[in-house]
Length: 302
Image (tube, rainbow, N blue to C red; front, side, top):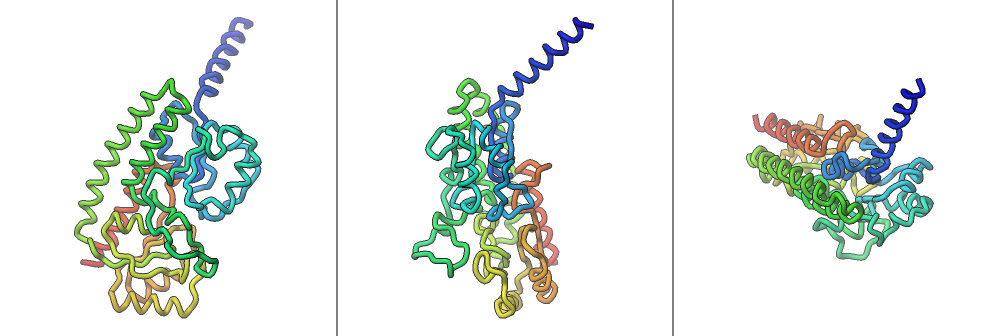
């Protein structure tokens, strides 16, 4: 019996040691978490602070988030002030020197891409939720995800140089698969280039540019402000005049107004997760989005 106990204890310690050897990564959003899992593989453990069903502008800075960051070897944020309302106190209260801004354990993934819609005028609150660094929803363009994955691989290699070659190999495999899917998605979307679409929040520019669509109106009058009756009437007028076939909206926003616009105008409302669901890979998430958009547009074209 003592021999079995010693054996079980040895196995437990061995497994515990293997688990503790993993690089502990915390990502603020699930797109970044999903990409990190592709790059890190079995060498990393990944926790995501915001659930895929949450609007990433508004996340409750719970004590559990502070604990996650306190234990992290690497913190990956979306940046462009998307998490500005909740992340700073989480990082500060974690007291983890490794993941403070400027340290190797801190990566702002927005520095890896070219931002769109960077404001050129002086900003004030009357303009709504405008981000001074540009539109922060860059992972809706899968070509940006290739760039992000490369930056994550390089940072993991810096944090864990003993496994640099594995991170590079994982990233190359992911990039190859994603690049092939990008070509297939562009081919599927090509017949609908130039099609007018309406979006709920000003968060779709990266995807509509990737897809070759034309964003002609927003259900929100300004980013983060609820639609008024007058604004909805104006959007409906645009949709009828231009025969807009599609409304795009993240599932974390209320559906009522968009459903009404779709019903009256004859457009199709496509509501999708704004971030990779917990049970999916990033590629599967974008694949679902493209397929729903193509199906909606093909149906309207008849």
